[in-house]
Image 1: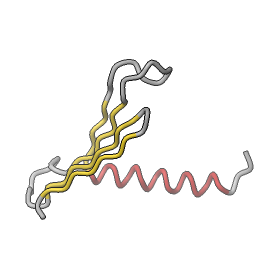
Image 2 (image 1 turned 120 degrees about the horizontal axis):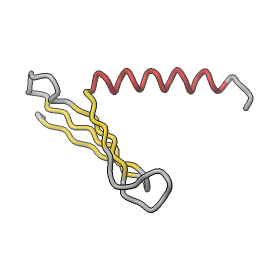
Image 3 (image 1 turned 30 degrees about the vertical axis):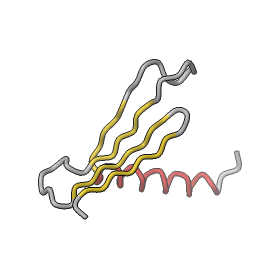
Image 4 (image 1 turned 45 degrees about the horizontal axis):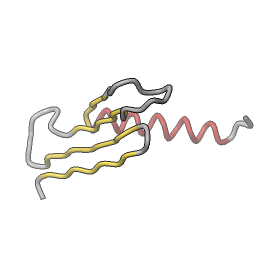
Length: 75
C-alpha cells in the first residue's frame, strides 16, 4: 500500500488525511481541516488549513493533554 486517504465530514467541517508511504519529500503526508459552506455564524465561504502529519500529531498531543486537564476542573 503506497497511498492512503481518509476523510470525515460533519455539518461544519471536513477532516482529511493523505499519506504517501513511498514519497520521501517533505509535505507529502498532510492533514487538512476545511470549513463547509453554510449560512451559520462560523462559516462564510470556505477556508482550509493544511498541516504535515508531524504538525497534526503535535496538535493531537496538545488537545489530548488539554482535554485531560479540563476533566479535573469543575465547569
